[in-house]
Amino acid sequence: METTFRRIVTGHNSEGKAIIVSDEVPARTYMVGGPNGAKFHEIWNTKQTPALLDALSQEPEENTLVLGPPKQGTRIRVIDFPPEGDEIRNLTQEQALEHFKTMSGEQASKAGGNAPHPLMHKTETIDYGIVLEGELTLILDEDETTAKAGDIIVQRGTNHAWSNRSGKTCRVVFILIDGQFEESLK
Image 1 (cartoon, rainbow, N blue to C red):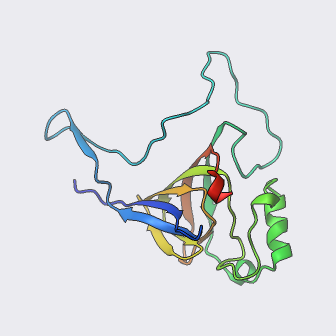
Image 2 (cartoon, rainbow, N blue to C red; image 1 turned 45 degrees about the vertical axis):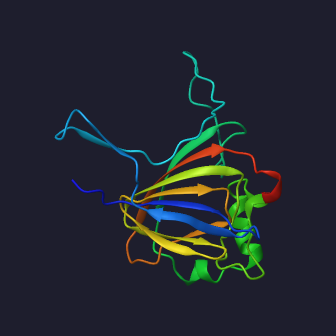
């Protein structure tokens, strides 16, 4: 089977603006078990994870929706994005901030001014997004691309928003990992 998905990696240009650094079929693939075996597509990795692995931990208690992962932790979630309508496209800066407050993420909101989308936000995380169904547009300061089922997005602390411009719901798995901006990106 030929590779049918893309790896989209975000970064920053010399002015600190969010851009797409790479948008391509994964280059590192490995056949395991010979020519008819499994084909591994290596997407991205990090060399450090401060996650505690023990035998007794239960699911952490949370009673509200939280945008990012716990400090030095991770979070995985599935989001169903309905088609975007005027109620989202026409949000004011204050209304957008209220959306992020419901997730304890008001500090992430970057709406207003010349923002390309009212739900622009930036978190100090690396997020892996895997599109399961439908399509979703990733909007950055100076770029955008539409990811479709099977595509994987590596969102690296860039200012971004998600827009479902299709007529169908889009389902995406997100894995969020706590990060730390280098000084020039703070």
